[in-house]
Length: 229
Image (cartoon, rainbow, N blue to C red; front, side):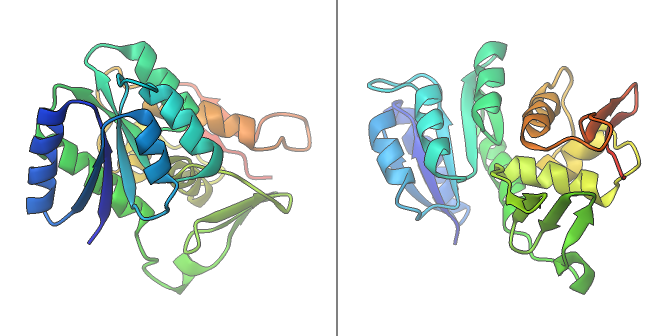
């Protein structure tokens, strides 16, 4: 049973989400402000946290920043519909994905499962469990660990997923829709900036190749490509 941390000050909404998630087989713990939510996230007991942007005492973005400083716990943000600024800032701070409010419990549950499928997936065969190397990048999918030139990479669960997809297709462009389906577990929505923001963050964390270029390149109209040296 996956344990979910739900951080939101809307008592009625939290109760509805909690009841639905528990019926779907999840164990749910709730917190109603950012301070309590941060403390609970640091216990290490949860598979994922659901985090609202607008909360008292400490807002969702500051809560996210503090959690990310110490933990790679998968985080799904709840944002206002049409509020692109909060969504982009949340992704830049390390959120794995977002759902716009108002949303249905079914939609929220589907997004949670999409994230957990990727973060908890077991390798399908021995080759999937083996180290995956592209240039100075080495990944261990089973351990969800990655290094660049031997130095550990601090990646969110979604960043790891996307980088693994690119590494398995190294030297070839990968479309945004493929990255969304394989990295986020869902088709890319219209006007969705999620992939772009995550890949921008990855560029800053990865090193350069011999000629000084980023190892992660945008291929016009085709998507993104991890350069294979």
